Image (cartoon, rainbow, N blue to C red):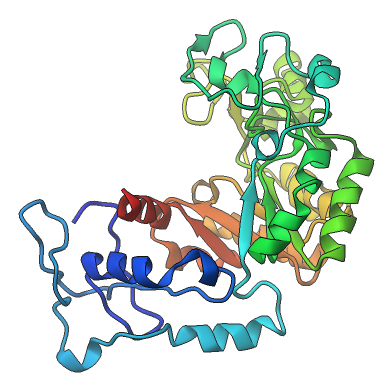
Length: 359
């Protein structure tokens, strides 16, 4: 098996090989039924699965006792549907939106001054292209390519979201940044003007809540953008308290620790108590502010690189700021251990498996 094909204990008592799982998705996961039910199919942890010559699972039952191999609808579904009536965080249909690319803006020409001079703007029907490093700013050109979607254009698609049966709208980062993906936070408290104003954000909140849709925001606490005033203050003044919010030293190529080697992303020293207070712990923290503005939860970028103890503190703080808030973490590791520290995980491993099935 490849490293992506992690096996976990089944929650529904159903065991399938990969070929059978693909078959079940084709038969049952149809467009007409997508808003009515889903089915989760898992392989047991400590069981061998027959392999074909290619190393992938071969057609046929998994190597389980006959009485443990069943077919049918997920038994866990009944329990989940009953529990979600009491807690919106259990079993919702979550829809992810990258605002810049979700729906075309009403008047892109009028907005073009909002985009960086080193960036490029594109017509809605233009396809994204591969990028090259723009050395003077430390970004790749495809990170600086913009299509102009904003809060107003997103709300124009509300009927579409309702038709899909969306319970939770998850927005990729919306705070002020340089890049299009906005994982390089410049100002944690500001809405990026490319998407709209704080009043426009409040309209998003009111519109979604009026349609009984919850809002989850992507937050980036593992690192921030080099253009952030927090970073610039720390770079300019070695005696600044902000200096302890980052990792500086000659051992780093840039003079400071970056995330993933990207010169535009500066890693944060999350063990620092003052930084924790700024990001999530205090009543006027970044997290408390956005929950107070109407967000119902957060998705933590690269959560599995943050650490269980810190994540647990963050979750407790979120629930203190808003009792029924949802904390989801991006996890590139085996998920179960991480659910001790967060309400849920966004399992990228599972995503890779699903993409593989669709190929």
